[in-house]
Length: 74
Image (tube, one colour):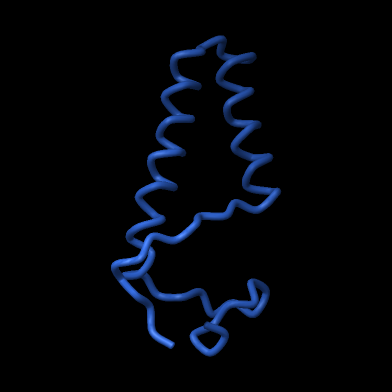
């Protein structure tokens, strides 16, 4: 089955990725006391996920067996 490049996909973050993102934001807010930087980084994260959701069709699939994804599984 081939990718439909005109389809939007749902971006899913692992628990580890979500935890790391929160740690980055916490560091900016609590250690550097820079709320504006934290808000900017958070918005960048959201924008990047949104862009990835519609451009994913043009990217190569991950062949790492640990992710359970391959061209054959779709």
